[in-house]
Length: 219
Length: 219
Image (cartoon, rainbow over all chains, first blue to last red; front, side):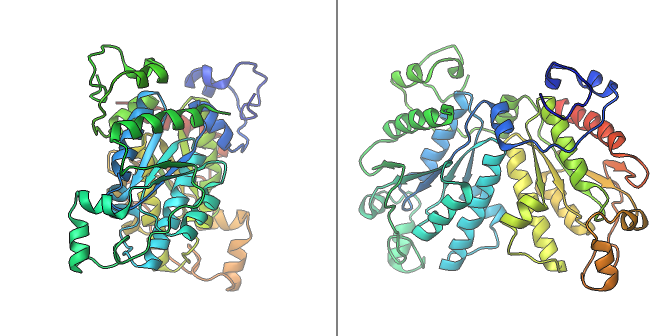
């Protein structure tokens, strides 16, 4: 029983109404809700699925597909991607090495907060440097961090080039472009690998949803 | 029915098992989970309770008490405070005017992400400047932002001085201290006001939990 309620009641406070809760003569003690209590309330084990891979490897597509699949299974989940982070929290950052490092640092800190709150997080950022991903793993916690490498190679990604970015990078109008004019350091021991240069979206999503649903339920 | 599943099934996908879901021959369409869907899944209206007030006015105590009270009522909630933000996401920031502005900007962006994910947020930061709180309101959305002024005055807070900070500020060893050597701009039209210089913790929490529970349920 929570020590939030000092009156000697046996039932869980959450099953009584707010009026009854407040009508009692209570003394409120500081008793922070733990990460374990939040996870138990949501009925899930919070993990961060950290996608990494080249531009065009399918990070956003698979992140939002995975999010939809988990949502339909009743999992409380959230995607952090360029649209909601680069245009918001990290709008002050550029794309040089230092800015990329700070970009990943902040995303990892936010993912940690979301996991502490009990939610499953999916991140969709190139995150090209091993050292940055290692820091993300430390920040979020090795027991929660699931590095998922979308391993389509630069040729496959450049052939697709859905946003025309590789063309601009080859023309030299887009500097510091990962895979062309900036390095991508492949994961050495990722929890998941999907060769999105070969596998189709449906196949990748079926594997991802099954894998992550098992992780979220475990424990 | 969600357009996630193309096969003509009438039941909600969430009530079928993962194996059955995956066994079907599905085509996955990108269909981002909306903020409304996330809120509906959690059965609550996400709001941000933005505490503002002097050091010692009771922000952290009431934030964690409110969090505990809402948790016991089944609300999925999370506190952003100095401990989990200043030591993590914002560890690179100091306490000058520009750093305080950036501190509040990032907290507002994170609160917005949490609200988008469906969670109720409680923030516990002095947030002394009107312009910064106005920006937070814009970022989070006026329909979600609940400015809660803990209005204990500097004399009441200095008498308590639970961390000995006012003494240090008077001695001059703690620069830019709100209420002593840096300004506090009181809210002009806050959604909630609690004079924590007069009201006890139990009374404040009873009022807060009742007020916020009604906001979270409304709509």
